Image (cartoon, rainbow, N blue to C red; front, side, top):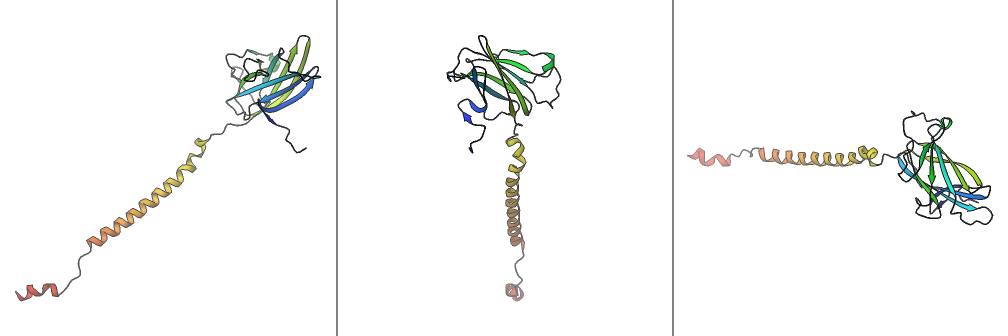
Length: 202
């Protein structure tokens, strides 16, 4: 009962598991989908009644950016690999991209997969269409894309500050020690009347 709704599997994170028509579909996504990075989307298609894996289906993915993102029509929103077959959708779904998911692109040949390059953070909309002969079913879910971390590039001011403090402290100590030694050597010897005795006698 306390298990999270999003679980991890061999294909990534289970983003959707739903039954429609004769199909039971499970959608997997990369564990960490970040802007500008490649997001692998995999689909497992099973027969709804028996649970057997369907290996001869046609699986098409359509992704659309978050609704609050405004981009120029010429700006690419998804970069697909050369093995993916992509085509622009109708004017009503401008900026959406459709791609066919195939078993050849999946490391696990029981899955249908396609790589997507999602370049803006937010909740992307994924529409999955599964067809087998005369049977067709459609599924919808969201693909959360997080903002890419700057990594060490954003941390370098904090990482470089401690070494600078240590070097400054060491330089200060060395200068103080050097000045003390130099001042001690330059001090004149104390005056003594005994040292002038032979000169007075002469």
